[in-house]
Image: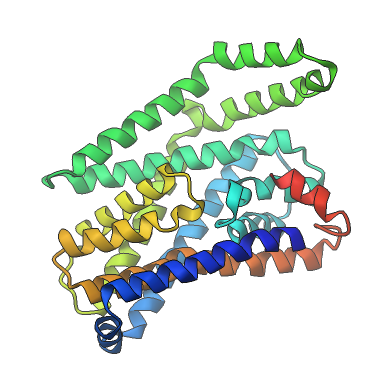
Amino acid sequence: MNRLLRRFVPVLLIAIALYGAFVVWSGYDDIRESLSAFRPIMLLWALGCATANYALRLVKWEFYLWRLGIRGVGKLDSALVFLSGFAFTLTPGKVGEVFKSAVLLQTHRIPVARTAPIVIAERLTDVIGVVLLIALGSLGFDGGLMWAILGALCVALAIALILWRRPLEALVEVVSRGPERVRRLAPKLKEAVDALRLVAGPASLAVPSVLSLIAWGLEGVALHLVLVGFGAESSLALAVFFYSTATLAGALIPVPGGLGVTESMLQQQIVRLGGVAMGVATSGMLLTRLATLWWAVILGFVALGWLKLRHPCLLAADDGKAAQLST
């Protein structure tokens, strides 16, 4: 646990410095003035939208566990495991992405190779949902269609690689013929490949993709509500488009949580395309990220603490080994 927390603290300090730079660049007085006119109730509504996003993605997590035939994980434990991954969303190396698998291994003895493919399936269906939102928002919007096309190409490539059996089978074959230490990984690799096809194949894409579409659309609604709280004139469709493109950009560029990329793109789109003043745009961006990113991190740590109380063995004395399992 301590090792994981040590990986989180530097990113938190970078985030504070980054947000401070946004405030200085945008003008402290302008931001203070905009915040004084903000209606706090709109932030609560935005937090509600973000929480609904997590609830829908939890349903998707349960769907994948069901598809893989994983039984014996209680609903409360399952929810806590899912939410605990949010605690390390911002850690280097994307620890939060596979942390859930390590937790399931320690608490319910479910092999990591069996659940790790869920990470890929989650990201794939998230991208599908976000791309669909961008495509819908790009109708009649100059420049937006380019993002939809790029995202669609990425999705098509990912699906093709998953469904194309020969490269993955060849990889398993190469591993099985390697040195003894490498050969030991072959059964687990084959298990992971089989699980990946089960959770990311055509039969498993429809329901999770619809859930992702609605879930990420709700976070776009959160941005709209925050801007309305400042009295800014911003349409719901445009706000969803802004949030979706910024989210996709943050996902494509390999930085933890899209930190810096998503914030900058949100701010610039709100100003240049939404016609909102810089002070309001920066304040709106910061409050939106509070509701959609940092709220998730807080919930993640609460869930992790609760899970630790229920399973004292979780990340116990052998902290180094636990950290290695999660990375």
